[in-house]
Length: 293
Ligand SMILES: [Zn+2]
Image (spheres, rainbow, N blue to C red):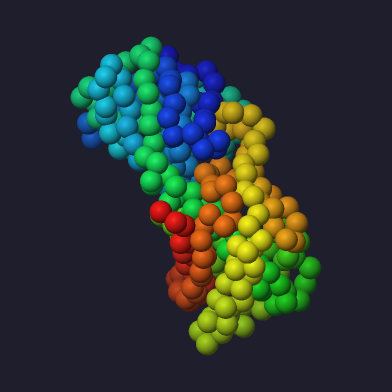
């Protein structure tokens, strides 16, 4: 049983849905499933270290048989054992570790090492997740802009030069079909960094949503192009989401998939609520895109 020597080549950043590949490694993954690692994939995997965009859905075809891909996760090995998802004990990029995409399929009928396979991601789910992810980035930039005057100290800047509330306070970001949910911790360290956390009271949230929505509407009207830039075609090569906006070119490190333009998202709306995480207030931003289907 050999483990792949190189990080998986990934074609989903270019928008690909189908890849022809050679199986490099197959091993049991529990629950009647096996993990299949190929040299190439078009299938977006979930990354346990920052699980914002879920895995694609789709099929792996081998010898004319189609097997549903039950899940796809980032996996890693150091030459001895393949660790799946949250079992990876090191950070991405750690020297001596190889990061790959593992497709989980039923053990019954699974391909063998060396087999030629075709991997196909479902187009409709991909499109909706891409719309959700692009909307999520735009909403985070629009939120930073709407909150810019609530900082009393110099803060790190976002991709458009606004104080980076999103990057400073983010607790979790979850992309779903045609939208996203971002949770921001309004904790002491955010207050010490100079952000007026007390201003985010329930009565102020509709006004905030209006300000963010107005920025999003102006960006939609400007219809900037969206693209993904990457330093190489491997899973671990650095990739960036790049969007042309009236204020400038926004660039955000991102491993996900995206729509090709702002206007493709249709109207993007946001709603806010306040939650509580063990005594720490949490601002929740729910973003919804309306792409034409
Ligand atoms: Zn992203």
